Length: 247
Image (tube, rainbow, N blue to C red; front, side):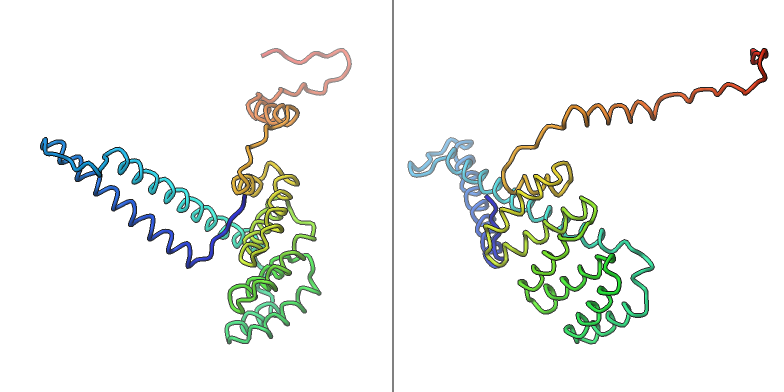
């Protein structure tokens, strides 16, 4: 089941896990030293229990850190993917909107970006920029989520669609809309099952990885074999009755 914690709760959990790991680890060390020195160990102290507790704290801490790193990299991937249009981002109209954004007039920047996007509906990165301003500058998570919902209605490549959907899942979580988040994670996994975003969605749902269909496996093998095949020597075009000269 998908669960997303608020930052403050996550920080408290991190501190608690680190403190607990240190506590149980030091207790384990103390008992170990007593045994090495062949000194009596108090009955209420258990070397195995403290060691196991310290290990469990470290395991949970590792899982949380790995999940956060994965989410961070996913966010970076989204920003990179949707900002690869290059020169189109340098148009005067778009740059004007960015200058207004720099001045702190976020609503006016959104208005200008929306006008630009209406004229250039294929430039999805503009819609992404509007959602980003809602989320990061205006702290309006609901408005950002609505923008992402519109983005996902566009025809965009599977990997781009998947990462945008993952970001929307994170927004749903912040809005405590767990049902929507879970539904969208399943949609990502089912719609484009062999994309990195789908793999991430299955990890969050706790689902196993699907097997690649035999037809797709065969296609991949054929592509690999084709790369290593020696190119066939073309026969020269000769008049009737003539044969190619042997080397």
